[in-house]
Amino acid sequence: MFKINQNYQKLPGSYLFSTIAQKVSAFTASHPDKEIIRLGIGDVTQPLAPAVIAAMHQAVDEMGNAATFHGYAPDLGYGFLRDAIAEHDYKSRGCAVSPDEIFVSDGAKSDSANIQEIFGQENRIAVCDPVYPVYVDSNVMAGRTGDYDSKAETWSNVIYMPCTMENGFVPEFPKETPDMVYLCLPNNPTGTTIPKAKLQEWVDYANKVGAVIIYDAAYEAYISEPDVAHSIYECEGAKTCAIELKSFSKNAGFTGVRLGYTVVPKELKCGEVSLHQMWARRHGTKFNGAPYIVQRAGEATYSPEGKAQLREQVAYYMKNAAAIKNGLKDAGYTVFGGVNAPYIWLKTPGNMTSWEFFDYLLEQANVVGTPGSGFGPSGEGYFRLTAFGTYENTLAALKRIQEL
Ligand code: MLT
Image 1 (spheres, rainbow, N blue to C red):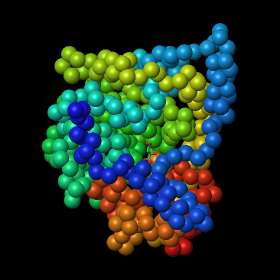
Image 2 (cartoon, rainbow, N blue to C red):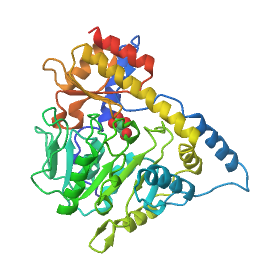
Image 3 (cartoon, rainbow, N blue to C red):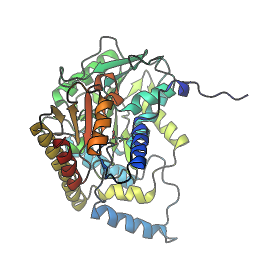
């Protein structure tokens, strides 16, 4: 008789955003007349930039011609895209990342879930609390997290770094020494971040204790303050301790297109073993490359017109962020984030739990958000709203919340 991966049995409930989608479907089925505004999952609403569309059209035409047709993509990514990434995301910021350290993929969600595969079972992970659930869930599936305590909502073999109002949502170095540290900056879900000098301390710490940092920079394009690093490789010594994950979903509106990349520096080694070679081996075996059309779309985001159009798109969403943040403040809410990230993190009013506030908002204002406790126990009593809606819906949602 076949056996299943028992680790899956340990996972509590369903994936956070699937649970929310189910709740919203149930509500809409029983209230078909209500117009729901969705500010829950961080899904973009603006159309692809014209430069991206033009590149995709051209790539489609190439695919329709035998002379310019493309079959399997190179498994690590086309040279034209890796070169553009190295030039615009790294060289221009003074980071020495070469094109062959960049692994193009179908998005940062898969990479953030898959990267743990190249690490030993016995590694201890450290995560911020609250945290993007994929990091923990993927380690649960791999059997690295120990047992689940349903009361505390924690795993016995995970080191949690609470990020709360009291510490300004900044993770502190854990008392126990981790082997792998997941950092998402600017942060999902709290929308906060840390200055570059603080990130440098994390790099120094990781190099000192021999830990690897899995650095999720998916929201980098939303940074507005000058002292915040856009890449961990802006920090001295990061190439010997950090893997960086990047996404086109949020900076270029590719949530439905699917494109991302991971940087695994050649200097990153465990003894004599190169993690770069391991990830290349993994990619080669398990991945057949992001589609040609999509990689050409990605390349177009780095053209002068593509960059200008995407700056406008980011500004559009950050206008939403400012509107939510200021509007909620005016209504008496305590709010965080929204300055370097498209997420607003608010304290739930009264003594409502995160899920109570979710239900209240859904039922009374027909607005969907994300309960903070879904991201971890320290998220209890908080709530996340995304700035990725349309401006009109954002203002309408805000008005409904203010009128509660
Ligand atoms: C979120 O809402 O946290 C993100 O959209 C999820 C993701 O990027 O996978």
